[in-house]
Image 1: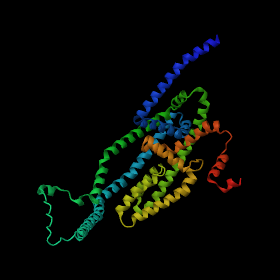
Image 2: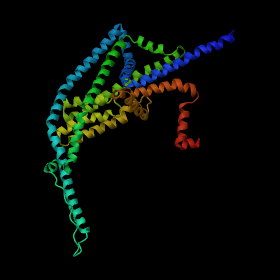
Image 3: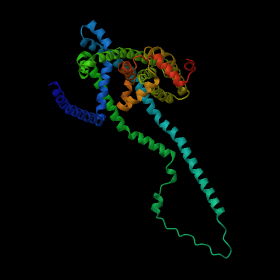
Length: 415
């Protein structure tokens, strides 16, 4: 009887498995086709989970003091709003002054840029005229002299050219460096619409993340319970281990990032104070503090507004700004990052760069915010799922030994 039931059971389950595969393939195809629309939603959800896990230890401590997660979350929001209001108040006057100075200096900047372009254009025209004279002389010298008594060939009859056509004919020097530079400027202004749309999308994502984190912190259990509801029951223990390791990593990373941002912003403020004064130094310090959260590109973005202000001041100010920037970068690379960010976070720079490229390609500019956590999460998942199953006896020393063999180091060859 059992032998008769088993084939029938296989025949019943087989069509269901095929249908399931077809539906799964159709769902994956639909997701790929609609990824441009789903990417902001997916990024918002990932950011909500990461920020919630990063802030959760602080909310848990406040909950013990205040008697509930809602009261603790409200207190944290009041602190965030107070800090934001203080930042806007401190940066409003310096920012207005900087924009005013830049708008006043913009015509003089444009003249400075145009003068060398006009000189280059005039030199190009003169060089072209000299070349034309030389070519005419070479053609005249290469033309054979007429033999006496031989009839000269009739000159070609030139077709009359209307005066209107001659006047409308474009000049050769019209496509010059100056006109090319002007076209570049016009093209840049033509991209304003695309930039505005991207900025609007970024603001929508940030607002969504803000409210999502707020409501999740008030009641996070249903959200994380839904994640376990997607995982089969036999994998719940392993999933719990992975989530616990991620939940322990994120607060440590967020704290180190916050300390690093405050340190870099304070250094930038202290070095810019003697150059620009107190008001502008506060603005530049805040910009440096915010942009330092972006790996590798943040320092370059920090230098741009400082250089714009330095050009407005004139003189040796740009040189001092560049020297101060180099000093901050030296301190960040040799002191701040090794002491703060690298302690307890063994993240290779190449892995961070690759993660940043993948995140930006998948989610846009805001994807850079999840680049560093993504490296750590992938590393944790690799250790818990792949390494424990396929490399159970391989240690870090074994991997280092194999790497030395690839590099053909002497220590490996001796061993």
